[in-house]
Each structure stands twice: as structure tokens, then as C-alpha cells.
Image (cartoon, rainbow over all chains, first blue to last red; front, side, top):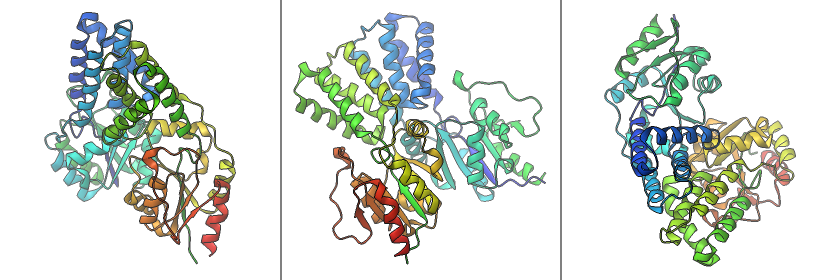
Length: 234
Length: 234
């Protein structure tokens, strides 16, 4: 019998849309700079800037906005128009104020899980923005704790599940990112469930584990409570 | 006898310089835009933008960089040169990579406190940047826990001192900000010690409490261990 004490869930693209908003902003950025390159070139340049800045800015909409401005400077050889800068700032601000709507099935699944397990939100991104999204989602009361972290690696899960429970071995992590939610949680000794979201940021993509006894891919978050219950009684 | 279990300390301008770096960046910003207004006007406009954006961006260097760009747009009626944008991005990047040097007496005081109390770092700002500064300072191992928060109000201290100890009444908070470190910690029921830093961001200024039995202003962090010991044995 596997006692499960803690269930961690990811936020962006697991509980509510996020990547779709980044993609829309990408598209708006491409349109703004259309005279300076085709979509492929602009996207490649933006991705390169984001990647280079990740170590400095971390995850989230503010760093992404700064990377868009920097990319616009590069694509225009420094001749970017003030209209473009203004539009980028506005796009960044809209990302931070976009309404938050839980994805289908989320509220019911979290309510079920919170009855039987210590339910923890584990997310990365801008600290204030993540707190604001959680507040706007109306889901805050379902969580015993919220951990907003700068990176999700095996050590993050070890610390978090030790702090909020009895350690990683008696914990489940669920989320949409193979790279951030699944692989490091498995490496820490936890169970983990992939809840796919139709869009995946290239940075978060990774190979699925093969025949791992503590891993499953679920069709939706609605399947999560029964999956955790089966582990806990199995 | 007042049992003291937890001691919380602020980071920026308590353990290392921060506001001086913001001031230097302000000065650089004023120089960059000198042809569009005098120092007073530029500073007033930047302060107004920062204040307006605080709810959206929160504290920290990334939001400050975005506010500088926005202010430059306003001061130039949208005719900002790309050189100015480039310089602002560079200034923001330098704030994020500036070396971190503990202020005099900090290491010794923290080492003393960590022997007898649960020592907690409580700070606001960019999540990743605060973690990086702590790592660069070499002080990380002295803390039992680190709490990076989006706002420091009485509830923040209640939650943090309950989580890492026996609650706010048996805790001390020390820092340089009357508004963020002292008043809300006293409101939560804690003891609190002001450790003045020569520069105070206007946003953090507030009136000192009068004759509050749990408040003291210290000359430097070197006085903190003895002050806490006196409370604990008093």
C-alpha cells in the first residue's frame, strides 16, 4: 500500500490558460514587426532572446516583455518606432491583467483532491502575477499551501514535499509540462501525472518516460482524483 | 520572560545595498533624458509611473526597468531614441547582475542569531533575483528558511512566523523599512527593530511608532543579537 499524503499541481496551462496568451502575444509581436522579417525569423529571434535572458529574468510576463523590446531593437537594427515600443508595453500589461478562468473540470477535481490529500500549488513565474491569478481564479481556498518557485527541479520537489507532508515518495505531482512537472518530480521519487495542454512552450518540451511505474498520462484533470486514489489504495 | 523563537530579517538595504543602486540607475536615467526635462521633473514622472505600476508589476528591477521605458516614452512624447531604450535595458540588466556584498557586521550578527533562534529571511522583489542575491551573498546557509513575498503586511508576518515558529508574538522582525518591516510586524504582534539605511525609497517611508514597548531603533545590525537576547531573557 502506497500512502499518499501530498498532491502538488502546476498552475499555468494546468489550471488555467497561459501559453495560449503567450502565443497570441507572439502573434501580435510578429504583426508589429512584419516589415522587418517574416514570421519564422521573428519568432526564432524572439525565442533566442528569451532563452538568453531566462537566467537573468526568470519566467513570467515581465521578463517576456523586456525580451520583446530587446528583440524589436535587434530586428530593426535599433531603428524601432516608438509605436512598436508602446504596443509591446501594452501587450505585456494585458498579459498581466488578462482575466483568469479555470479550465473545465479543474474546480471539481481540486475539491475532490483537497478532501483526502494535502493539496499544494507549485508554480513558477512572476511572484505577484501568480498570486493575482490564483486570487482571480477563485481556487485559492482549495490549497493548503502555495509555493511559487523560480525553477522546478528535483530539489524543488524534495523540499516542497518534505515541507508540506512526509516527503517526495508519498507525493504526487500533476501538470502539463514534461520538463518541469513530470521528470524532476519522478527524479525526486514522487509519482507524477501528465495532464496535457494542447500547446507546449518549446522550452518545456521533453521526452516522456518509458514504462516508469510511477508515471501516467491522463486525458484530463478530471481523471486525477481517481488516479491518486488508486495509488493510495494500491 | 518573553520566549523568542523566530527572528525575521529583511534583505535589501538591511543585508546588502539595494536602494543606492536604484538611485544610481535613477541618476543615469535623468542624464539620458536630460534634454527632455530637469532632474526634478524626470524624477517626479518616474516616481509617478512606478507608483501607478506597482499594483501590476510589484517590486523589483524588472518592473522598474519597464517603468523607466514607459516614463521615457512619456517624457519624449513618444519620440524616444532607440539609444535611450537600449541604455535603459542595459541599466536594468546591470541591476540584476550587480555583485552582492554583505553590509558591515551582517555576517557576524546573522551567525550569532542563527545559533539561538530560527533565522528567517523575509523579502520582497523579483523572486529569481532575490534568490540570486542571497546565493551571491554567501549568507544563505545561515537561514533556516527564506520567504520571498509580494507584499509585507501584518498578515504576511502572521503567516510566516506561524509557519516558522510559534507565531508572531514570539518573533522579532528587523529591517530598514518603517513601512514594510516595522509597522506591519508590530501590528501582527511581533517585536521589531529598525536598522536604518542612509537612503529610504519614498514608498517605504512612514512615521516611527511612539513609545511602543516592542519597538527599538538600533544603530546597526551588530546590535541586533544582544537586543533579541535581552528580550528573550527579559
